[in-house]
Length: 143
Image 1 (cartoon, rainbow, N blue to C red):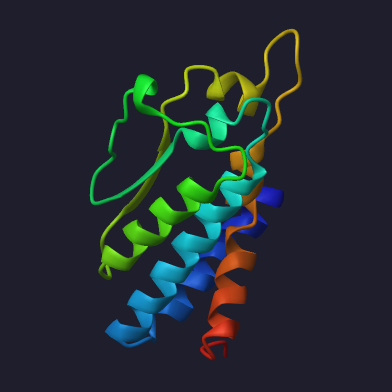
Image 2 (cartoon, rainbow, N blue to C red):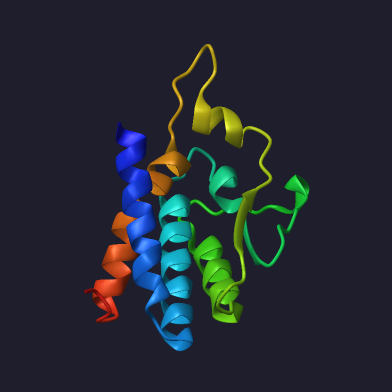
């Protein structure tokens, strides 16, 4: 039942977007991607900062970053800067990608037989309709 409700809410959000101008759509898309990606970064658990520093945003296609090139970023400031730069280049209809090349990231997200998952990405995905509603309200586009 929860999935049906969230699917309905997501479809309603898409229906609202359909009535926007191209410029408004671009603004909403950029801001929603920025908000969601920033939340993922801030929700990423920090021990050394390597997992948080391994986030790599891109537009159009996933950018696979070698784990050896990732940086330690405990506060997420570098990741936030990279997200901002990526979304500024984004045009309506383009795909925003956010990948993490850290080899243990999957285990932290989903857990293992020895530790609980932290679900730091999943929680943001579940809040997508609320992020869209918040951005649309901030931009004065809520109906």
